[in-house]
Length: 168
Image (cartoon, rainbow, N blue to C red; front, side, top):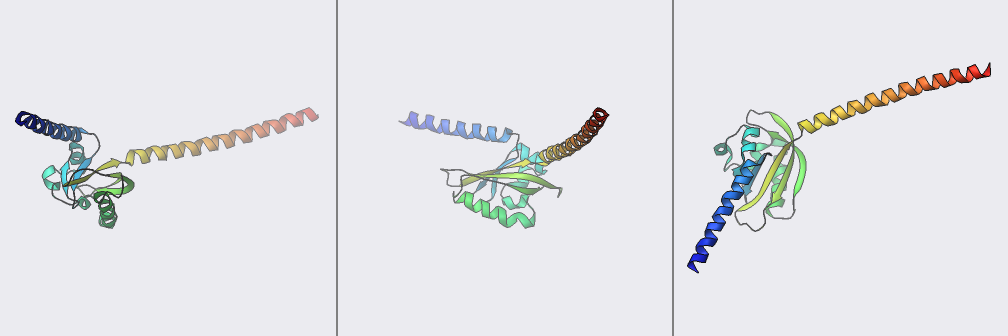
């Protein structure tokens, strides 16, 4: 029984380390928060994305990462996550980096079930590239529509010329 308990503890420790390693190496900026909304873990991607190191964010409220006008909305989402009244919540907001640069992001908040102290995690996805793609797609659509209009006018003119030449 002692050996079984020892093996179980070793296995639990292994899983904790493995989970932390996996979270740390994810490419998306990610943080884990406690029941008060305080950050208890950030991954490498969040450190790079934000410009903050782990020591600067651990123990700080998640709302440190958003502008003043977004703080209440983020608090409301975190409350729902902590109370587990949502399975996850994704929405658009803005992120404030250490250099005070404002970055449009998609924020996904997810509760962690079965934990007492750790209540959830959040992922920030930089949407600037997506916005650029949508802008380019909109420009391409406008250009294509103009081409179709121009070709239609040319075809109408040719059709008219052909009809006039057949009347002669």
